Image (cartoon, rainbow, N blue to C red; front, side):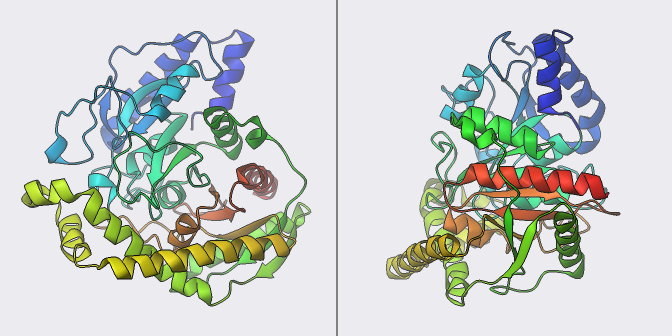
Length: 412
């Protein structure tokens, strides 16, 4: 995989120019894209800056994020060829940092669950996940050192875990979602994919303008969470979590078991109500004027979502609000730095009919807390573990991810 920090180190040392770094990226795309199919558009004549802390870094932009130089087509024929007049603020920020938004990556239609044509480069024959399939697969294939995705349920953490890369869902609203096609304004969160936790921390710190995110903290105090608020994980996922525990303890990590109160079962259920009610409004124009052009899973979802009453939605919002306050208090009083849990139910499902299940991501998206998934060493298709920190404590989540990543490398 292409490492953002390695490319930047060579550029700063004068052994590689930003333009040469972009050429390397384009060469990797030419080699791998025919089999991976991670892109819907690429910039044939990119403008390469020689200055800025991300000069020479090519970035993939999920195709629900507006770009003024490339079409934004939402994974839907409804928006085929649609060209925004302006960049989304997140894209403008990347350009100011010197990065090159080189390509638009595939997305499921309107970031729901109807699969894309993208293939998983680290697990042939298995789904790359969704809805940020193209961004995860592009990084996993070594075509890009950095890519943007979004998460409403599990669309950063799940595909990152399935493809064996690092995925970061920051604290809610740390990154601006203006200029990003909305599915659920209460849940939609911009996120990143990178080759390592160190790469991801460096990128997020620069993009968010918060250098403390790229710091290194003490060895974390870790709460090991085997989720009980939804259907159990598969044996492979639980074994990966246990391997992560063993390797973290060998590196000096302080780990203890952790469980959530029963009230979080209700919060987990509230996620669907909030997402569905808001998606019916966010996609009202598309549904009312182009329903037959919507893919089947999304069309059926919206048929049902439009029947949810406002009172039901309001009740779900109250449950979510109470759970966020409760989680804040629980984590504050727990004497823990992070939680460690599964990233997905198991390995990526075989075939391409499904993008997988987001049940181990939805609660954390609803809570708005920072989440990071990192790959766990082992044979077969990739498996990841998920790191969760308090709201706003993205620095601690990424510091713990770097600690675990190093612990895994020593033991593998």
